[in-house]
View 1 (cartoon, rainbow, N blue to C red):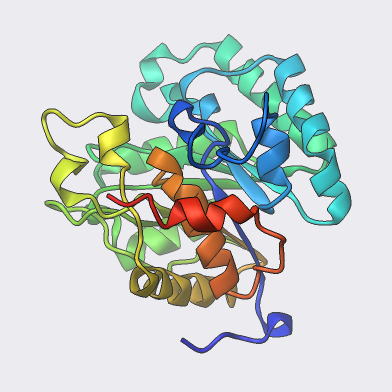
View 2: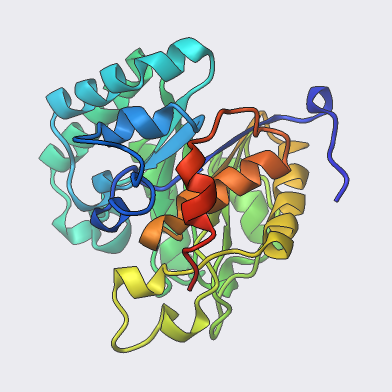
Length: 291
């Protein structure tokens, strides 16, 4: 894989989705004694973290302010940005969204913007959200509700892979989230599409067996470890995206057992961002964690 000179490409931010899971105690934080501030710790090593909790529950202003303080050391370092998942009511069931939800979500974005920490807002739509007239109309409505935010949309269904969709998203100034996911049914494959100044690529793993399994849960679905060759394939796409975007976010979401952290570390080194003094135990523990 040929790496592009850094001065000829947009900035790539690499990091994990979330910063603390119960199953990370003996993997990601294996070498930390006592209580660990997971956000402060993770932001010491990665230039971005995707805030996932906002998808399930909109946090209070004080919580978001706490987040900004705990990553201040990273911001001072020169380049740390959060990406934020939009509350699921906006993407999975708009009928449940209230004005209070909208106001609370805007407050989250406002705090992050005031601290120069908002990199992108991710609207993750479910597989059942197909490319239809009504759904395109809803995207336009969503953009009108959040007109000034760096909004990026993630589709899971292949019906959205169409040149006309790319032009539609460009017209709305909506970013396209490229994804690496298990190829099941009409899943979107790995792409390098760019529709705004923000590039985005999310890596969910390739756990085909458990992706749509009846007995699958969040942990089993995202229990996957990318190989070196798979990461190289993803890196090629990421660098292609970065040549056409001002900033590109590469987020690893294969979180179970810390695989997203270890793959993000490997990936950062692969694309020339691995000049951090990575925790020593990550190198040893990561070799023990597989599927």
